[in-house]
Length: 144
Image (cartoon, rainbow, N blue to C red; front, top):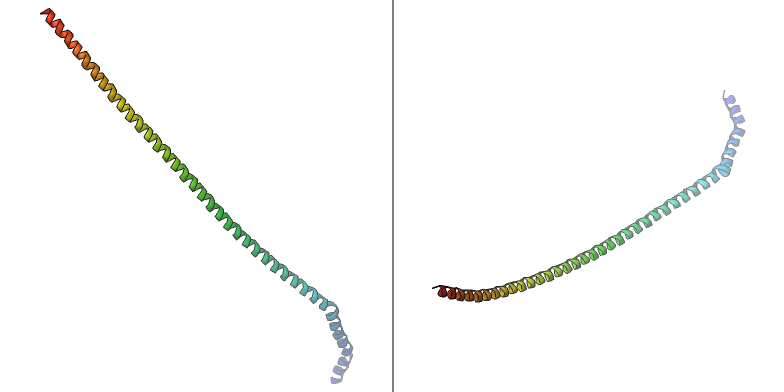
């Protein structure tokens, strides 16, 4: 039996050598270039990922910069609007004050005119009352 096993092993040596030769041949002709292609692909993929990551970071920085500029522009706009509103309110207050002064002056002038008219009316009434009293006196004395 040992001799049978030896004979089988002796016949298996060329197959074993062929398998080892095939292993080294496939490793150098097929798996070697395949590994090189896979490594290159992996390197390119990692490079593309890094580039994409850098692009995303740059885009995020630009977005942050645009947001800051937008906030600054909004702040300036609100400040301008507030200044214009204050200016408008001041102008309106000045117009109201001028209108108030004008109306007070008109009221004062009207009161003075009314007082003048009242004094003139009193003077006229006093003169008419004296004249009427004189006539009444003359008429009463004539009749008596």
